[in-house]
Image (cartoon, one colour):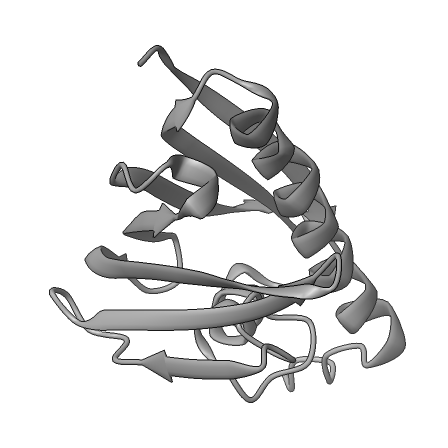
Length: 145
């Protein structure tokens, strides 16, 4: 099976630390785990996760293991789903400061080079849009001097 890599980016109106914290917290609106039908998450290196997402009238299970967690700049984990045809792919998310904002770059490597694999790009773009919207709707408190 031929594999490919996908990358999506988004500028988020908050600090890297605030964006990272939302990304890692399954209870935080705007994060990738929030709103799933079922989430089991052990956010530690070698910790496992299970994520069940309803989409197009069915439940899509996702599994993985955290490889790196470097607050507030990087999280990397494996990603296995029906969309990857059971192949273990890797998701790396970086949080880079850009003035008073954060550039979030999500790189998903080892995705099947087919229609289902490429649909991950749309899914990740949607996740980053929800993350950005979270900070527009609930802006972070200004830093105290």
